[in-house]
Amino acid sequence: MKWDDAPPREDNSGAQLERVLVFARHGGRMPVNDMTCWVGDETRYTCPTQTFYGFTNSPSGGRSPGFTRVRGKEGALKGGSCVLGQLVDSGVQMHIDNGKQLGAAYKAALGLDDIPSEPEVMFRSTDVPRVYQSAEAFAMGMFPEIVNENPSNLRIIIPDSQRDTMTPSATVCPRLNKALEEFYESPEAKERVERANFERAFIGFVTGRSKDFSTSDPKDMVNIYASLYDCMTAHVCPTVPSEPKNVPLGLGTSSPLFKRVEEDALFWMNNRYGLSEELRKFAYGPLIGDVLEDLSIPERRLSVYLGHDTGPANSLADTLQLTWMDSGNVCAKTWPPFATTMVMELYSDNQARFIYNGRVASVEAIEECRGKSLCNYESLYEYLETVVPNEFECKGIPEIEHGNFRA
Image (cartoon, rainbow, N blue to C red; front, side):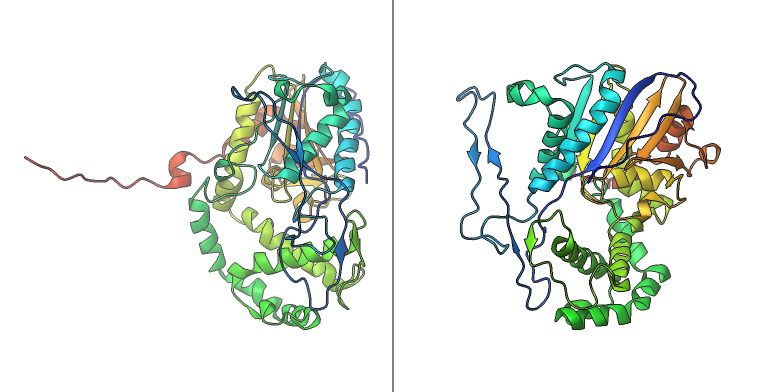
């Protein structure tokens, strides 16, 4: 799988490319849930790619050997070698290809060295192996000589998971939970659940999991739809090494129900955050604040953010209402496939351009940018600032604790 090369700017302005930000999803992977997809599922998985672990710059031991991870006999997935959520070889290749493609497009234009280093180049990942391994594969593609470099000379930002802003998080912005609770109680959420009652009953029947799909609680929808969609794609996706690729009758890729499950999973997983200004601010605002801080570093030329289907690309695409210019389809309304890559280009004439999976996208959230391939950078920056919550907005006004007065 390879995205189209980004087309040149249409206006032939002669402006110089000054900076590029990349927001991407990890490559192809194993299923992430330890669950029975459907009664009678006999699919087995094969993973020749393995991972290793070690440490560097230790005052006591310096650099460790790299131990290859072996699953042992207690794995959740059938087949004997794969672990839940593991990056597979096709996923490695996806991001090697992404790195090569973007390296050819941007490396010389940005004046980047053969070995990336701060502050010119920044890599950031969530603290999940498949994600930082995807970042490593991307770096291998864009900077081939990196494989010969000592790890102690290379840096990647991986925040603590409880403080990471790359995906919507109530531990980062606690008031997100309250906003979601209000949404779950809304007529819109309840009506959407009710409209799909028959659909869920049929899914429960064909999967043999009627009890799981009998719920009508909006809070349950994200888990039942996202996990089912994960099961379905793990079975039918050619980039996931699984055999046999059988799914229950009615859930195949050519069936209308497959598309309905995808749409519902996308809505409950991602699109719910874009339904109100408050939800956008609490879900996407913390990451956008980090991006604006990144943009304030004058020496920075390339920033690479590697994450998940829930962010970072979705956080920007949904906030800005990015829309493909060739089709008019809203980017955030399509499930981001493995190795999705959204690029933000910044030019010397104060213009910004977005490329989502190789296709130019317009910024529909800003009136002056609608229907255009370019957006004024200052207007873009000012709009993004409005989405960033302050501490009180995220955490609420702290309660004053009164101590005991003793004479």
